[in-house]
Length: 549
Picture 1 (cartoon, rainbow, N blue to C red):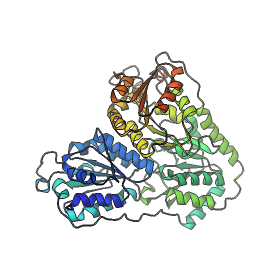
Picture 2 (picture 1 turned 180 degrees about the horizontal axis):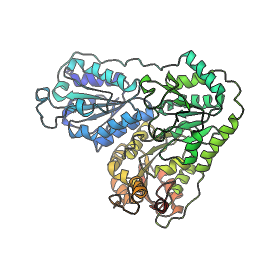
Picture 3 (picture 1 turned 90 degrees about the vertical axis):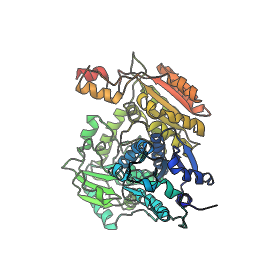
Picture 4 (picture 1 turned 180 degrees about the vertical axis):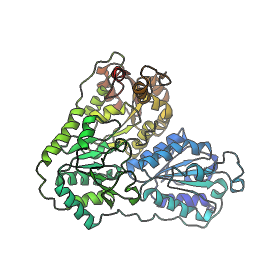
């Protein structure tokens, strides 16, 4: 069997423990597909759209903590996958996107489907390389995985001219480059301990860097040892037990004023594993100029980018939290218990749910209440972008044993592909995807991928016939001037049946519990079409209330 560059690339993937790639097949990298035919150790998941394939690779990275891998063809394939590159950048997720390219003799001639990917992805990817020399392809692939996972994780794009992949090579597969965890300096922990010992009202903001199971355990240990309230960053509500007395809430979009006002009274903010983006910081208003900020992150380039930093500690979240928990903590200052109780009470009051009467559909809180009663302690919840997610963030009590896979970038379309990727990675765990009707018709075709692969996903569609988030903004700024946000939807339950999945409907509140139970018991994919209320447009607002303001 001849050995070409495509085979050298696949051998390098194996050395990097890549066991699954997501793709839409294309002729520009067909030599790689042919090589994968002989490598059953790497599962090839064929998707129905490059956006879905890219989202699956992003979700796979979120679930495993390792770089996701995606292959797409040139031109339309690559531009379809751009949404995943942007998401990986904004979410700090390691992703390697391999893109087929025109033959080298045609480069620069505006050949069929040619794109200059160094220009196209320069503002989204950490690194873009077009490989011209077959002998250098294994080295380029190894460098791509190293860059994707180092510093601030993110996307890397490797461009593969079609003829280069077919070229013979003697180049050997490249081994992974060592990337051990970054531990904090002893003096940094000691200095922080002095600050914490004197702080009356500290708060710890935990981000995605603390997502690994060991880091979650270390976070809980550090919070208990130092009597620290913990608020989680956007879409990271699963990092800390929500019922714990030290839990101070989730910093998502438009948190109620009571929570924001309370957190602004902190005298020390310890940010761990988060870049402190605009949503988590509520539009760059938290921390306030008067609060002391200690920022802990694996990449020093993030310090001072948006906030003045009193101390920056270059470290990964897990070793930092382990070191903090192990450092002898003095007795908490007087009043710390009251501070903890006050912050947790704000969260607890917001988390209370009382069913609302709705003449135009079901209060989506009924579905989240059913999830709270029926989901296992290790269930995985994937979440598309949209107002419907507010019910889950507000009323579902996450534990660190749960896994929440959401989209920090706010891109619609993650929900279905993420559920498929998570179910393939953990076939023995419950995987529930929450999706709006808008997002379902963006990437819902990946339900076919779930059926084809046997991924046991349970998709719950909040169907209120509207792009709800944009409708909320319309009602806030231009009340009663509704344009472009209404949707005419198909029968999603019937659509699911046509795909070969179980299709269910929830049209009354009392149907939520049995529908979820039936979906969870299904042998294959299941879809629940929930006719949700448009009047109750989010867990915090109604259309009539917005108009009255």
